[in-house]
Length: 305
Image (cartoon, rainbow, N blue to C red; front, top):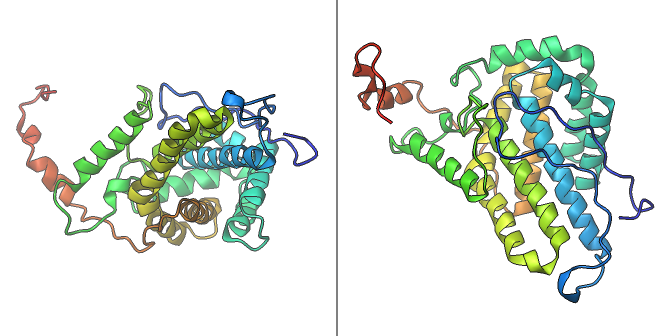
């Protein structure tokens, strides 16, 4: 890619997520690769349009992974990366190129976020996170997908959705690593997964026509994942979180995440889920557990695998 067309996208490597990480995946380098001299099967040099598609896929991957780390449990090391000058600059460049319109929701929410995502803001962000989201799956603003949905759905709704998420991850060669102590439906895990898929899209675009079928599958996977998972429930989570926290850094992060996921849904031709999606009854998961028999095990007994 010619440097006269746009400045290079460069960012320091992000710290590994503390709790939500795919153990067999290394974070992508978001710097554009040099243009190859030729593509397979005599397709010739990459066009400017091809280069732009690769760049946009990398920028989308960066935005997904930025949000994945922002919604992971707050750590000082991660906050230092999120608020570093280089990260802030790349996020600004990413948003500007993804949505050039100066008054687009993505750009206006990013600008508001930049005013609060500063090195000195970690303590407030951490306290707001603990208050609104907490350590358990069922805080005032649950950050796990299966807490949201039709209250009249089948009792097996939750385990089925978890199984579907695991199948998605395995289909693209990913396994939640041993270091992760989050469920498959944690928001940061789902965002990390989309970061992987968009990075794969950039790689396949660079590969040319011989990767056309793999590229189609990768893009269809993104579309389906947005429709059935991330784009279905995260708008409701982000709206709830902003209402709970207000105009602090965490609340503005929710606004930016909502704008970005809705932008991703539009790009994929998917209708985003309702921002008014309800939480499932708090006692339903307990009732589901009560019926499995594990609660009746004697002290010290090991549940069957």
